[in-house]
Image 1 (cartoon, rainbow, N blue to C red):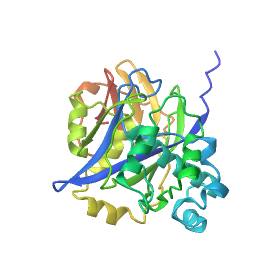
Image 2 (image 1 turned 180 degrees about the vertical axis):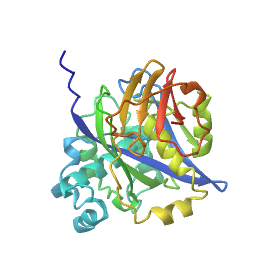
Image 3 (image 1 turned 90 degrees about the horizontal axis):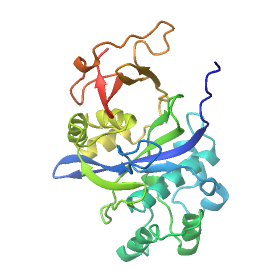
Length: 299
C-alpha cells in the first residue's frame, strides 16, 4: 500500500508575549477552540498562518519602524529572504491583534482609545481578508518590527494532519494594553509563569501543545524579564526544530531533534511510558500524548 503523502507546509508566525508581574516572569497563553482542526483544546501562544497580504515589502516599508536593510539584518537568517522575513513579521503582529487584541504598533499620536478601537474592529463579522492591511494604510499605524525578537523555528512533523513552517517571535507585552481573546479561534486567555504552566499541564488543568511545552521549558530557566531580554536581544532563529512522531500502542510519541535516537535507522522502542514521565522544567527529548496530554518522558 502506498504511504499517504504529507500535507503541504504553510508559513506561520507565533508570538511569545512575556511580561514581569510581581517579580515573576509570565507569558500569555490562549486555549484553542475544541472545534479547531489543529491543536484543538490545547493552550498555545498567539499566532497563525502568513497571508499573501503580509508579504509585500514595497507596501510595508513605509509602515514599519525599521528600514528594510535593518529587517534583513535581524530576520533574514536560516534561509529567509526579505519578502518572507517581512511576511512572517507582519503576520506575527496581525495575529497577535486578531487573537489576543494587542497591537504592536507605535503609540505616537495615538491614544488608548485608538488601540481599543483596533482591538474591537478585529471582532467584527464579515471582515475582508485584507482588513488589516487596509486598516494600517488608512489609519497610519507604524508597526513595531523593533519589538520582535527571534526565538525559534519549528516545522510540524510529517504525519500531522496540518503542517506549518513556523517562526516563533519573543515580544515584551506593551504596558498600556490588555490581552483579550477573540472567542472564535481561541476561547480563553491566561497570564501564567512558565513553571506553573508546565505543572498544570501534567495535571490536565492547562493542557499544552508540544512546541509550547518545549518553549515554556526553555523560558522557565529565566527568573526575570530583564534577564531574558539580555540573553535574547541578539538571538537568531537557531537550528530548525523538526520533530518526528511515532504511533505506539500507548499513544503518539514525539522525538525532538536532540533525542539520541533521532534519525536512527534502528527501531525505536517505547515501553512503560507511564513510569517515565518527567517533572516539569527538566531536560527531555520526548513527548508522550497520554489521553490528550503531552508529557515529557525519559528514554
